[in-house]
Amino acid sequence: MRQLLPNIERPTTPRTLRDPDARAARRAMLDLPHIAPLARFAADLRERHNVEVPDFDPLDGGIHARMLFLKEKPGPMTSASRSGRVGSGFISRDNDDPTAEATFRFMEAAGIPREETLMWNVVPGWNGTRKITRQELLDGVSEVRNLMTLLPRVEVVVLVGKKAARAEPLLAGTGLVVRHSPHNSPLVRASRPDEWTRIPEMWAEAYALIRD
Image (cartoon, rainbow, N blue to C red; front, side):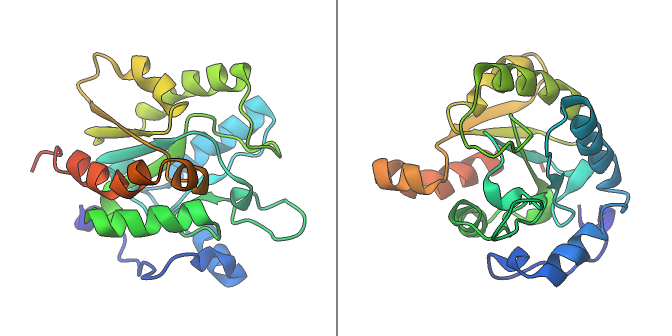
């Protein structure tokens, strides 16, 4: 995997995209070969759905990823246009919010190399609210199939959260291994702490299913 990706230094601590220079540097990477097809995919979603769609993180594996973490919906700190505390414009474990920090730490605890992974959401756009309408979910699920055509190396898909699980029927018959995980949000930590604590173990078990 490493030989397929550029030699990029990756952060060793969470929340680094709070820094405007870090965000600018990340944005300058969007034309790199491993991420450019996914940047075009996100741009197409913005145009067709008329909604703010964050970009994939160039520090992840891009089209060479072997493991896809599919969550529910982008949060406010993915939004580069929000008022007040500006977000990053990326779906990233480096975002300046508790869920992203948990993702960063859980990936580290699970021993999953960053370049093996890609993160996305079933509902790809941020529209100012965490609520998910039925139509948003239906539209988003239909786009998952389009995304999968760009990820020929993915072997394992982890559906993170109950709404993300709605994408599972689209993955039937693809040969992909599908696993489920609770969402790693503060809400789950507060309401179901035992499940939240087990998330790194569940992710590690999913990663172990990747073929050598």
